[in-house]
Image (cartoon, rainbow, N blue to C red; front, side):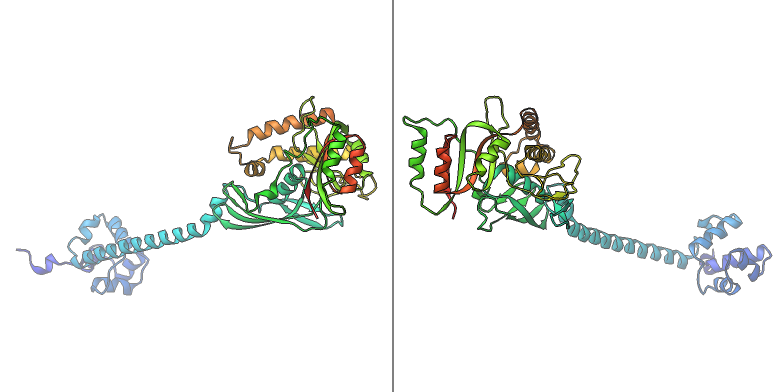
Length: 407
């Protein structure tokens, strides 16, 4: 029968037997395993245990399996089991804490991460120079609103924007205009962009001029008399936004000089961008717009935000209606829209083609047409009084005028 002492021989006794069998003092044994003599003494008297790394070293050094070294030391085995349980619980606890921290981090970062996959109006895309030589940064919405409003909205040109991110691809925005048709009135538009969809709280503010310019007008009498009769109902002294359609397309500089003589406010010229039949989609430029100089990709869009040579020292040294500059400005805007169709797709509600290929194809066609034919003016949008409009009708160049109240 095995006595109780043999059954419960602890690791300290085994270390003592090993040390004596090897003829080593406690000091010599301690040096082999990089501990102090007192530590070896404490092991042999059962005051504490070697750590797992030291036990493995003793096992390797003397050719004793780890199992043989510790299997009869029930207290050590219980201690190891207890350490494993504590370690397991610690791992679970730390894992849970890690999951919570990761979840909290994702919750904090997720709104911004999701937004990276959608149109970001706050993205800084250009450093611009104003006419006083001061630098400022332009966001994606700044450029998109400037280009879109000048091309499509004769009533207003939006020159300043503010956007507030609210996470997950959502932004509240405000557009402020530098009014072209009615300089006496400040104007702003607010809305929300949400995951590549735009909501303008007053959709009428983004009204295009599609139905305002009409050339194929039929009348039993003289067209001039018919238009004069219609204009006679307007109030004297009041100003109106007027959409003037010409009988025939005019060269840009000729058209600008013709409209300038009537002293209307900030004319917007409708440019022919269609085919040889003279089709004019509502796309235009302001004929009296200086704009700003910009450092935004001048090689590709040299006149994007400016109607003048960006390197001209005196912005006023040439007349504003010079076709050379107006054509470059118009093409720069079209090229920018071709390369960045997202805003146009949102405003038009176009969901065809993730990358906006239909927009790119049609815009490329318009650029080609203008490069081949130059700027041909189909009509004007102006700020004018009743008297101004009657004088314009008397020129004999107008086939239609539509008006809307202004001030």
